[in-house]
Length: 90
Image (cartoon, rainbow, N blue to C red; front, side, top):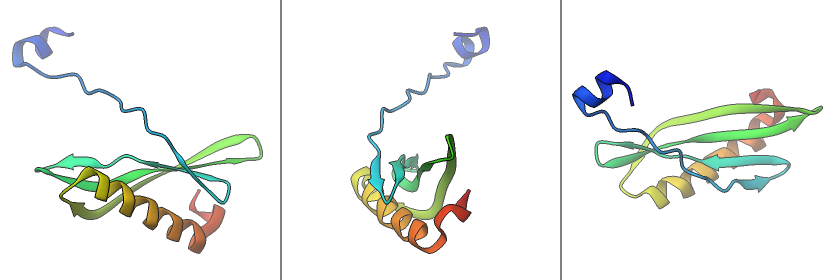
């Protein structure tokens, strides 16, 4: 921990181990963002295209009271986005 972090009490952020949801060859990683006691819809959509892993960071304006609700809605929105856009999202 650096000097300023010790001085001002900054906390280290733990990375969560997220299990992806597979959908039509895409991997959806729900990663809601805590914000003001609620959770913003966020995550990643990942796909292997010709041996290269492509990632799209998915952040929406929706906020929900529970993390599990935010995860569920993110997965639904990501599936819809994949269906509408396909590989053009990358």
